[in-house]
Length: 94
Image (cartoon, rainbow, N blue to C red; front, side, top):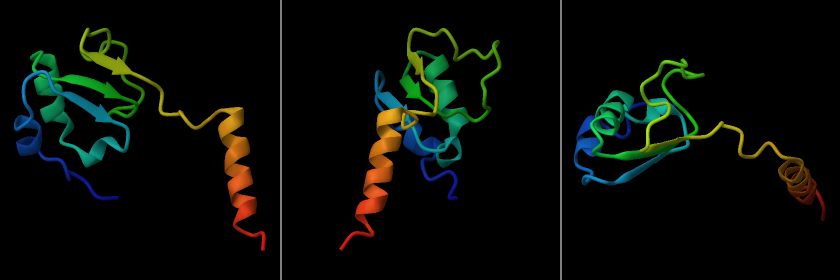
């Protein structure tokens, strides 16, 4: 998997108040650069992946007003699994 496609320069170019949405793999982005800007209250972050998972309970990103942390399992519902199975079957039907 590629890493550092979004570099510190990209992160630093974002305007103050920008929302960063991180839902792929943490290694895609320069996470230390994101952390630095978020902890400085320059950016907001919503993420379901982090550089360390699970985040330690003392991680400074937890409990911040500018961070929303969700589990990396958005597709793990009964409905999502049913739809996935239907789409798989549809690929094999004439």
